[in-house]
Length: 472
Image (cartoon, rainbow, N blue to C red; front, side, top):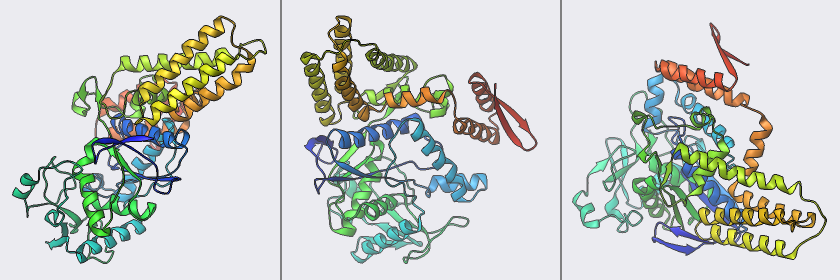
């Protein structure tokens, strides 16, 4: 198994430190809004990585994907809507789980929230360790990390050390800031009026964004170094750089042995933006008549380190690819004759080996899918020629089941076919989105959601006690 390590900028052999279980952490959503298809390009790539580690490399996986449920954005959102922070973030956590299930993502072993009491305490303990070792200072009730105290700071993002020194001593309170703006960053924030507050033994306040992931990763995965840390390419700096700084200065150990980052998603060759009208959630895509399995296929079809351009024509091509795959599997039901053919078994074995080799080579999904469809073409020709018998079918199906263990599209399509339309959870998700649109007085969006549901066979009825729905 080889993966591209962002830290070294090269492909490296990868195996877990204990030879058995991959301890893997990935940064999850900041739950101030529903996840969009750009987010899910990352999470589907992560799912493919997880599946490859399991079904190709043969490792066990312990995966942690967190929820950032306290930061500048979540606090501002809760205050704007007049809701307790936990109530505000819970809706988006629930939506994330629904979207993951809709897209066929395997569940993580752990989905911690930053505000879990054990995690808050772990953050306090890490800040206390950093204070004891001289890596921090206090100012106006907040605690900051001194980047000058770590000579190797910036090696993940390849920051220019001369440029960094020019800003030495400056500090930043915001959880997010501009690329290569290397300033001392906040670990523990002084609480402002109306904000949630905790005191895990370092004084009252709340965590900065960066400390959350370091503390959760080491608390749930065990001592450093963890085997693998993953996330979107936009997190390399400042978030992951700062995770390395605080984790390694607190523990005196390497934080993560391997760093894997997933590239951006473009939409019709543009950055996704609500102002451009090209911002889509999973329900948005499904509401346009597409299946989640089609979206999953499109989002994993290109290599995870290359930018992927989402287009509606691309969705149509993805749908055609899935149909080729499923139509071939359906043809196997009609195979007659009991004979087995050694050349079929050999062709299948060669394709399976090619698939595994591609996936083990830094998750080369495009090459792996090429092996799948070349096998489909070859076996269709052999079925036409009558040189595939029932004795071959079990081996063929086993190979395609293995392919789908990793790709996860055909099994998802089968679940969609079995469901026979929108589930109750899908309908309730649409209704929640519509209610949010009405609250922000975006009545055009609310009406569009109503029309989308109507097209999908669901009628909404607004009344004094809320919105009810029924199927046509």
